[in-house]
Amino acid sequence: EDLLQTALAKTYVAWDRIEDQRALDGYVRRALLNTRTSQWRKRRVDEFCCDELPEPEPVPGDDDPAERQALRDAMWRAITKLPARQRAMVVLRYYEDLSEAQTAEVLGVSVGTVKSAVSRALGKLRENTELGLIR
Image 1 (cartoon, rainbow, N blue to C red):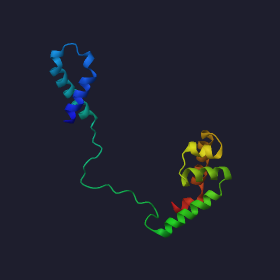
Image 2: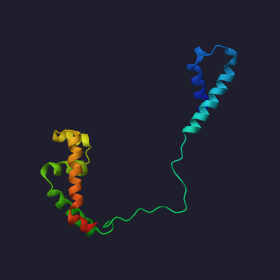
Image 3: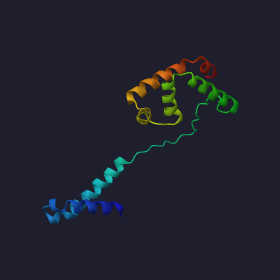
Image 4: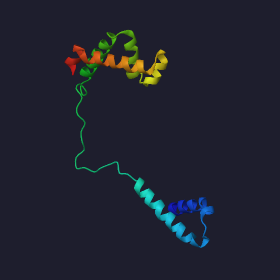
C-alpha cells in the first residue's frame, strides 16, 4: 500500500508531463518498479551476525575504584601544572564537553587558538611522568 501510494503520488506530480493518457498504466507500473528499486538500494545492513560477541579491551583501573581514583587524581594534578590559559581550554573542552567553537567563544579567542593550545596542552600531559606510571 505504501509503495502504491508513493507511485501514485509521483504520477500525480508528473501528470502534466504525461502526453499519452493511455500510457498511464505503464507509467504507474514503471513508477512502482523504480520506487521499489530505490528503496531496496537505500536499505543498508549495519549489523552483522557473529558467533562470539567482541569484548572491549580492558581499561587499566576500570575494575578497581581505587586505581580509577588514583588516575583521576594524577590527571587533575597534571592539569593544574599547565599554564592557566591551556588549563582553561582543556577543562572546557574535556571536562565541560564544549566544542572548539564554544570554547573559543567563552574565552574570546579564535577556534585556531583553541586547537593549537589544546594540542600543546595534551602534548604536555602525554609527557607527564606521573601519568606515564599509571598507564
